[in-house]
Length: 166
Image (tube, rainbow, N blue to C red; front, top):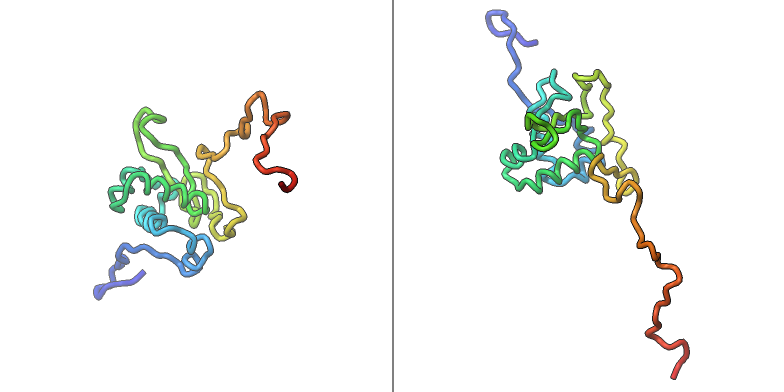
């Protein structure tokens, strides 16, 4: 802690710190511009004692970053899938009676809610390998893809090309 001319503790001004090891990671390099901007916004809301209680909705992020709600939603999913953030409490007007926003945790820091140590999942992300889809955002239904009851077997596919020449 720094001291002023009278010897009193002098508080550091608020700042956002992005370490070089984070910005040089493969996951950071893969992030879109909106994803990077959203991460900085989430870091801005982190005060050192509220990780796991960082409240930010898609609408708030879109307004703050001057992007569409669709782009903000994609950026949140991107940060989750690359391992930069995790949802602690799901928000949403429909899913919660109080209509509060989602509460986030930065995986770079210890969770102040559960005490879980930093996972830094983004550091182990490798392009094309362990890309994950956040829960609730499945690209394939839990039971797998459905095939019509009749199935595809036994159906004859008409030939358009003769087997032999003219």
